[in-house]
Length: 218
Image (cartoon, rainbow, N blue to C red):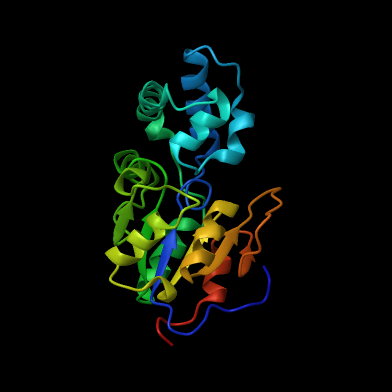
């Protein structure tokens, strides 16, 4: 972790879900592989992993060259995720860190490109559904990441300004919108990943976030 602290006045934390709180990147990649192969496209889940977290339209376009089959792909992906939702687990340190943040009086929102219904099922399976104060899914905003809409809405649902929030994600397209709306950005790098964007802080797991934060609004 780099040695830096969040600015004064932070009141809420806006979390990405896949790869940040939940160990789901491979599952979501397999769901896209299933959907794309069902429609005749040759692709492997490893090709998809770096795109997990982007809107479905962006991923569909990357592998098919258009969004004409987006609805069918989305339905196939949703069917796969529904079938395997019970396999979802949080990274080991996540439940304790989230509870500690709540004890410190931080407000927490989830901001994920997943549909909100799928996100709730994933969080239920991981045992963290009752902890966040709000959830914003990709179906709750018009424009997905890396546009900032999902994080702006997540802050709004916590009744805070984006500048009073820390955005925590695992990809450049979490850092990009955080910078645009004036939020402090924290990148979780759990394995080999070379970010193109420079976040305000880098941590290797969620426990590093506690070292970056003080008490809310300090």
